[in-house]
Image (cartoon, rainbow, N blue to C red; front, top):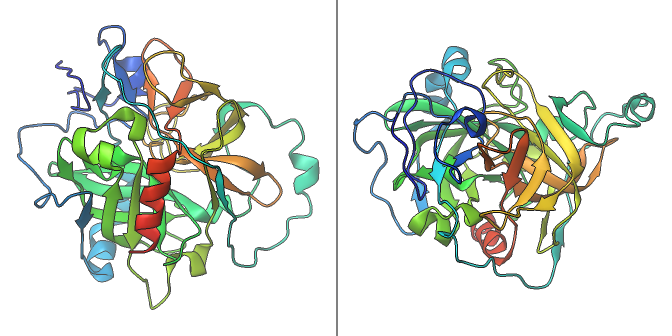
Length: 347
């Protein structure tokens, strides 16, 4: 098994659980919340030439729908990357005044039984989300082709000027210098089903730091998806709010579609609790969470309302330390994440 640093992926032999807990790398190695399992063979670049900061992927919806069959979606492997060890991360995450963007959601059916079901749900180290609400429509699985193989992550539809913006992890749009192809967002995914359609990306983007050097502190990506059947994404599924520069040590909920054992990618999983600031090698948030490969890019919310399933997205699932089991880390949404969001929603 070969493992390298600075965002270059590792090679695995067979599917395993969360790479943060299956790696045999030296102390200090980080692994993504996704797992690319035995897929990093010398097949060459699968992406097109890399323009600065973004990648256009003009596959029509009919092509995406035909390619991403239920079978392909079920069998898509998660993604794995190694990140810098101690001392390699020297960049600070720029911060300015807090900014909150409220959710914009279509009318949702009321669920009168929710209040009696949800007391005591915080904290939660990992389990199926049964509360319903908007998050079951805005959160979804992300599928793409990387180095000639099909892989998966998670993502979230957010409030945006273009009504077409999805937020995910940086390594879910670009890795090892290559932008992923055949990129599609499937909101509300369930066991091979796409109840709200398959939304192909017209453009994928990442923070400048991730684009340039795959710095784990800036592992934030975005996609602008094409209209589907003449409709825009958030007109169909709604959009969650966002929060930038909101500080550390917050009560948060994390969502995603983990696909490695004990999960299988078939349903939406969540964790909740009070976050910490990573005391080790990154500037990220940390949360007690047992989500595994495939959850990368899933949203973290502050001010999350269990009854409506709405909140303000303030991070994404990014990585876990091999020597800290059942802990997920996500990037701080500072100025660079805010600038990425602004660039995406005006594209």
